[in-house]
Length: 456
Image 1 (tube, helix red, strand yellow):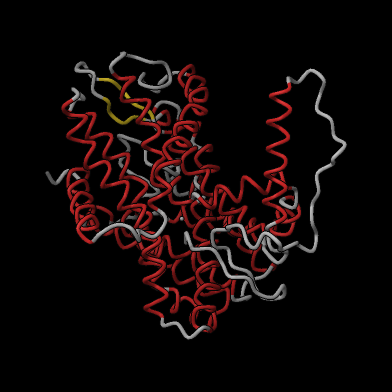
Image 2 (tube, one colour):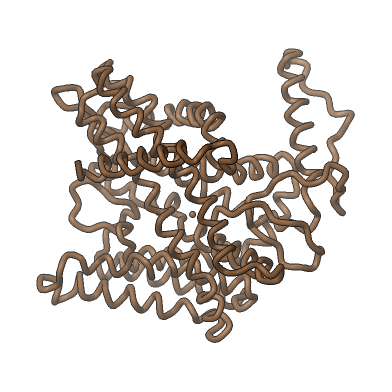
């Protein structure tokens, strides 16, 4: 999951960018404006304050809709928003804690006790969609930059800066929090667990930065091989999986799985590049959907791949760290479905009430990615001092835990909204930050990384 900057307006026939939307000129009126029924009257049972709040929400949604350029491809933004929301939802639902005798938190997962819930991870693991949309976005952004005469290096520096600022911000803040929490009596084991959770989603940014740098080569591959440009990446992961899981597995070095890291996540990104270059259409999308689904089923039923798409504590094999062939099969099926449903999604998002949340989510993309685990910990760390809080600090090994954890989701979401109100500032350019402050942030971030990775 690129997290690009907002696009510049262009003609309605030009390919659109999927970069993060923002309001445009207030006097711009889309070709197909949406209006709110002025005669709609809320239920008489609603209180005046409720009616005013609903009216304000409708007005805000209509204003956002009216300021959206008519040429904007809402389906692409909707797909990115869906992938973004799946990240915190998956971590909050499938990540739990246990309390030791000292009151310290340790990572746990309900999938360790309830393996039959693994299909839930198939729905929530949609990073394939994120990389697909990212490849689409980066391709259009790169094409526009080159048309303006901007160098490849300049284009890449701008994109990496937008990715790096929020990561630097969250890690620097946590570097300052660690000694503070320690002084307040939070156990060291809890701090280790917290740092692991905070840094867990940030690996994505590093991988994404490397893949973004490969965009010009991905475009050339799409021009030469069309939609088949992603096939060599699939084959590379298949070979590595055969070596590490096949008859020669015991003779293979432990680092062999790392060879899947780049091609595994580049696969869906390359599909997105091909899509943006109009080298991948509906026929290819059907092939991805059917072929990916068939491969996914074969890997599960015939080759006994782990069913969970996320890591489960205590399990020897994992599909996602680094990605296995099962991840690519799922990404292929998801990408095919996304391409086929693009028009329907776009029509659905013509409704202001649905479109407005998509805009807000896209504007806060990196904040959601970087801070959602902090929102979880904001509830769990104080809860650990109260003992076993159902669904929060109790072991995720009962059906009751799943119900309680679902009830906690609105609390986590509310905490993320509160944190994001202040953390979104890290996404904007740090124009007011002096070099000394930037250097200090870098030092703090590096120190937190060392702590989180267990190097100190």
